[in-house]
Amino acid sequence: MAAPVPTPTMTPTAFVPAGAAAKIDVRQMHFYYGPRRVLDNVTLQIRPHEVTALIGPSGCGKSTFLRSINRMNDIVPGARVEGSICIDGQDIYAPSVDPVDLRRRVGMVFQKSNPFPKSIFENVAYGLRINRLARSREELGGRVESSLKSAALWDEVKDRLHTSALALSGGQQQRLCIARALAVEPDILLMDEPASALDPIATQRIEELVYQLKARYTIVIVTHNMQQAARVSDVTAFFWLGKLIECDRTNKIFTAPSQKLTEDYVTGRFG
Amino acid sequence: MTERSRDLTFRIGTGAVALVVVLIVFAIGVELTRQSLPSIQKFGFSFWRTEIWDPVAGEFGALPFIWGTLYSSVLALLISTPIALGIAVFISELCPAVLRQPLVFLTELLAAIPSIVYGLWGIFVLVPAVRAIETSMPDSLRQLPLFTGPPLGLGMLSAALILSVMVIPFTSSVSREVLRSVPIAQREGAYALGATRFEAIRAALYYARTGIIGAIMLGFGRALGETMAVTMVIGNNPRISTSLFAPQYTMAAVIANEFTEAADQLYLAALVETGLVLFVITLMVNSLSRLLIWSMTRSLAPLQEAAAAPAGGAAA
Ligand SMILES: Nc1ncnc2c1ncn2[C@@H]1O[C@H](COP(=O)(O)OP(=O)(O)O)[C@@H](O)[C@H]1O
Ligand SMILES: [Mg+2]
Image (tube, rainbow over all chains, first blue to last red; front, side, top):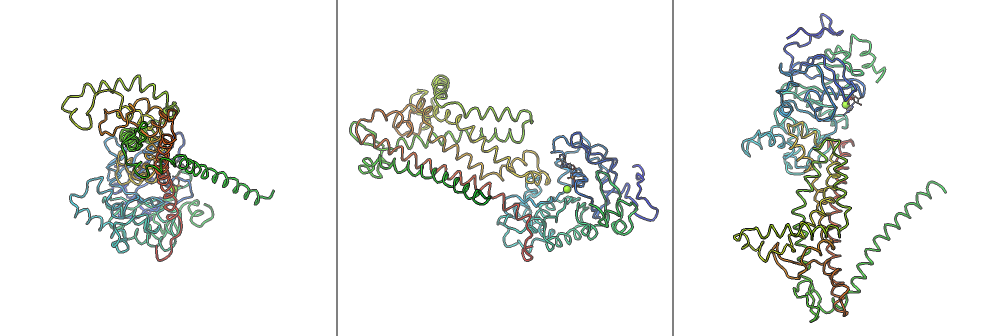
């Protein structure tokens, strides 16, 4: 493995990119929608069991970046990736990698909660069923329960598992989507502004959940909200116009960023 | 005119048009009832249950026609639904973008062919083909109640086949629209959990299920009322049979065939009452299917609002 690519953020005492120990290792990545380039030469290492926040103004490519990690962009016609993205040292865009397997290992939670119009139980069981991950009815039930517990939703829904998921509140629906993603036992969890449609209390619950989950998962979270990034993340990456401007420990990004642009953004001078 | 009064005029105007439509439907029902009074008074409810249709003796029962209409339509539904859904899924999910418009156009074209042309095609192409199938069927199978009777070609099977062809464009285009209304987030949700393309399509179909049932029922409503093509191939024999080969009769066909011959008042009234029965059944099927499609498109809205609207503290 090559030495970490030097970036302007490298200062001797600060953040040292994970290098070979990285869970997700993105190198010189460009992304195109048809002819249009929306990500330009992004190099970024993400360490296991940390929360990495992606911040930046709307349209700067955060979602696109996130969606290239589980190859969700494969279903967008004309989308194309250059460079490499490795997870545990394996290039996920290599021809031998099946995106269906990859997506099971890299879970995703969307900006708008999108439960299936089924019961709460069936929502969580869905991924287990399609991936044939439970051998018996008991095992299925057990894994649904433990996923709902991990997503801090079990106590609220345990008495109505077989009622429609659509009757849940927005915040509960989003936690259900997290439970659904956790059920298939990914080791990476991608979250695209998971709380942007929620009220402050529901948002706080999601943030607490992110904090609890990082012991077991590597989490990449896109957020529009600077305070949220500061609260939940260990590392923050700042994107601007398709470029990764700076990536560093979160407290450094918010207190002493090395780039002027980052400072302007986190202090709210633009965006 | 002020903005407000223009708005009001518009609302009254559109409201009046909508009311007229409802009134027309109502008026048709009333008029059909009025014209069939002699028959209603003479036979009462037994009209729905009697198998005898004997204009000479003045005995009329609509059961063979009700049976023929429902049987042919249900068969048509069984044949057309998988094909129509296959077309809808192929066009909306699988086919390359350049093929999409031409395919939509072609299926829509099927709906534009006049019914009499289908009938002619049925007589010259379909009926001989069905007859060939019937004669080549092994005797052991011919013992089954489904396949008894002489191999005429004209009969229930031909009618069901021609009906399915006529119904496919309706079912497939409505299903296609319903599938298109499934939010991309649903498919992505499935993909994100490790779904294959096939499984993601299944998830979309499941999401759209009410609308698709509505689309199927819409096709059913259309099959119920189809007259010309069916009349030309069904064999026009008012005898109830489970056999696909047996010539049978439908409500629409008997009205079309016998209306000009109906000399006496009771005969005429019996035919009109047959029309009334058809009217009632079709109206019910159509309202139900509209209701389903409507509930489908409506059920999307609360879901999105629920996600966007801040939920109360207790519910959060
Ligand atoms: N499916 C798509 N097809 C074409 N362009 C897209 C698509 N999705 C996003 N884009 C464009 O790519 C850029 C980055 O979008 P996105 O990654 O969604 O940004 P962010 O999440 O930071 O707001 C935007 O300019 C957007 O218009
Ligand atoms: Mg985004």
